[in-house]
Image 1 (tube, rainbow, N blue to C red):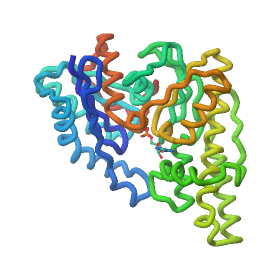
Image 2 (image 1 turned 30 degrees about the horizontal axis):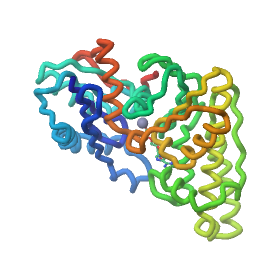
Image 3 (image 1 turned 180 degrees about the vertical axis):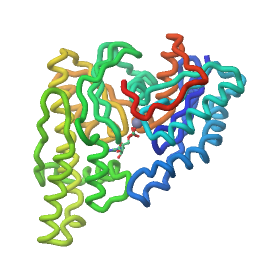
Length: 332
Ligand code: KG4
Ligand code: ZN
C-alpha cells in the first residue's frame, strides 16, 4: 500500500510517502519569507505553497522510489490552518487523485500531530494522554485508539507556541522565536526572574497573562537599564521557558491524576523544546509515567504524520471525494 500525503496548513510545504505503513520519504520546504514580517503572512504563505508544492511532491516520490502510478491513495490536510494555505494542498491532492483515479483521504492536522507517535518505536499503547503544543494549539488529548481521541483540556486564549514566539518578539528576536528562546535558555538560570504561573480551572490553560507580565517586566527593567535585555538574554529566556513549561506540566500532572492514565506523550512544534523534553523525562521517573517524545523532524509540521493518520483512515475505509474542501477551524 503506497500513500502520498500533503501538508500545507501553515508555513511548511511538505509531502511524504508511506509504503506498507512505513515512512519512505518526508520532504519539508520551510518558508523563510515570513521572518522579515515577524509572523506568518497568510497571502505570502499561500503563494509560497504554490511555488513549492510540485517540487516537494516530486522529490517525495523520488526519495521513496515510488512513481505516481504506484500510488493507492492521496491524503491531504483538511484543517485546521490558514484557508489560502490549506487550499493549495487540497486542490493539488484533488487534481492528482482525479487524474490518477485514486481515492482521497482528508486529515485533521491536530490528529496527525498525535499520530506522529506511530511513525517510529516506541509507540504508546492505548489509552494515552497527548499534550499537543504548537503555534496555534495547546491541548491535552485523551487517545483511545488511532481514530478515537477527545480534547480534555485546552487553551482559552493564546497557544503556548504563540507565547514563546511573542515573548521572543519582545526580546527583539526574529520569527519564529520559540527555537531561539530554547537555544538561549540552555545557558541561563530558570529561576533568575520569577513570572506568575497562570491558574485556570480544570484542565484548561491560559497564556495571555504571562505574556503581559513579561511585557511589563521588560518595560520596567529597560527603563532602569537600556542594556537589560542583551546583558541578561539567557536568564530571561530560561525564566520564560521555565514558566511556560511549568504551566504545561502542572496540567499534565492533573490530567494524569484525574484519568489514571500514566502513558504520557507530547506532540506539535513546541514538543521540540529541549526544556520540555527534559522536564518530561524527569517526570517519567518522579511520577512513574511512561513518556513518549517524537523525533525532532516529526514535532514541527511535516507530511509524514499526515501519511500516518492516512494509514489508519485507509484501513478504516474512510475516504473523501472531489467535493472535499479545506476547513480552517476544524476540531478534533
Ligand atoms: O506544529 P508547528 O510546527 O506548527 C503549527 O501547527 O503551529 O508549531 C510551530 C510552533 C511555533 O510557535 C514555534 O516557535 C514552536 O512551535 N517551536 C518551539 C520550538 N520549536 C518550534 N517552541 C519552543 N522551543 C522549540 N525548540
Ligand atoms: Zn502543527
